[in-house]
Length: 64
Picture 1 (tube, rainbow, N blue to C red):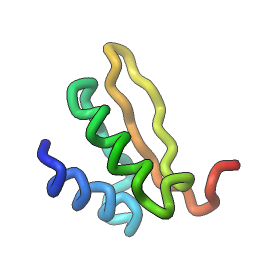
Picture 2 (picture 1 turned 120 degrees about the horizontal axis):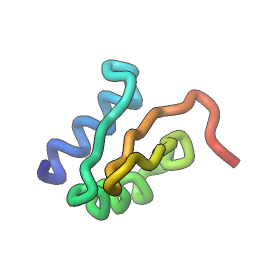
Picture 3 (picture 1 turned 45 degrees about the vertical axis):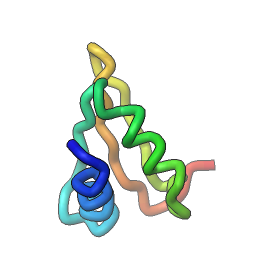
């Protein structure tokens, strides 16, 4: 997944067009960089899966 596709998927997650976003271990470093650069980064919650994959959800309330 390239950066443009990932940005689009993160926006869809924020807009509730999708419930969750699956990120592979290989794509994680780029995804993390993009999330941390966003103003709303505290709304993203990543849940680690086996083999290093991550499932992201967008929360209405930011984490503390």
